[in-house]
Image (spheres, rainbow, N blue to C red):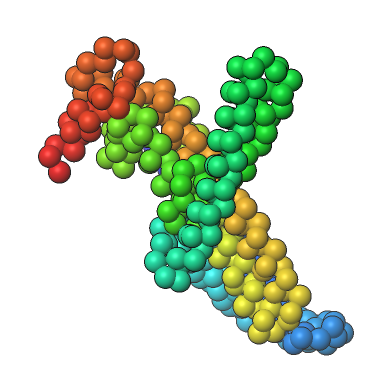
Amino acid sequence: MNGFLNEVGKQLAGRWVSLLTAPGLLFLVTATGARSLGHTMDFSRTEARLRHTAADYDTAPAALVIAALVVLALATFSGVLVRWSSVVIEEFWLTPWAFWPAGPLVRNRRRRWARAHWRYREAEQRREQAQIAGHTHAAELHARAAIRHAARRNRIALTRPCFAGWMADRLNSCGQRVMGQYGLDLDMTWPRMWLLLPEPARADIRAARDSLSDACSLAAWGVLYLVVGCVWWYPVALGGVITGFLALTRARRAVETLTDLAESSMDVHSPLLAQHLGIPLPNGYVTPAIGPNLRERIRKGA
């Protein structure tokens, strides 16, 4: 047991260092260097200050130890601050903003989505007409056009946009598609579905969720670097902007993977859920006609 606890302690310590202390140390070094430069490119002043500090600590080893502990504490504190800030950023990204001033963004996204959807339907109609007329080549061209328009529409949203943010809309589309296909409320159904998922599927979903959390943490670091750059040294701000853009890209990819896995889980395992809850499936799968019975069993009148 002692050996097991020691090994767990080593793993937790390693994860603590990687998540909090190491990025915090990098941030402190960057902030200290930026402060010494002060919106200039005079690196000689920074070098002289480093030499002076090293000479002071060389004659006082105890002060060096205390300084190291203080730096470690500050690095850990900055890491904890980032982890807290990442929760705020995640809430901001995933909150269904639909009111003013988000209203114009929602209307713009709806116009773009409706235009792409109209072009998709038009290409599909032309494909059907060409196929009926026996024009195989024309039908193939219209089919390719329909695929392009559908991809352009789906990049905006999988269903008609309701919110200003892409990630919030992607989560909302996941619930709408499950409701439309199976008549199931994803929010109420998912905890029961999770109990039936095999471990490989759970691992994939956890990995996608961790990727989203890491992306939000990366965005929080980007905000800190942006602040340091604006206050002390401008080039650091550029690094903060690049970090924020990278974090946003990773977050979108993580949300896309997470929603795809959630929908796939409902597609594959919803019959198993109905079987465990005692709902008969005449066709072997959940339909919109059976979904309300399953939904009522889950909601228990709530």
